[in-house]
Length: 48
Image (cartoon, rainbow, N blue to C red; front, side, top):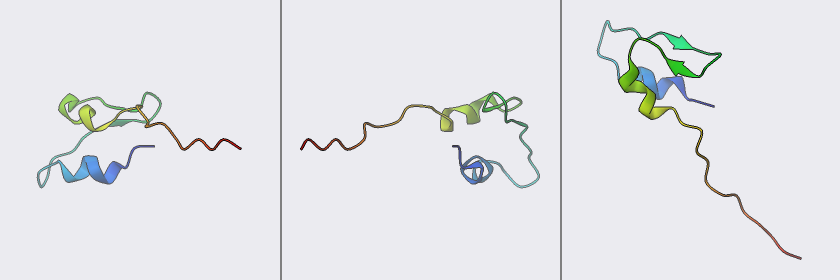
């Protein structure tokens, strides 16, 4: 899940960005897409 507050923090006062929720992308400010990713770190693994 993307924290839209992180994206909003990158905007200057009065600027807007269009969020495409279906595709999880910003459509009109492509520079903001670097903050959106689907790469997750490996989780913990416990062996018993």
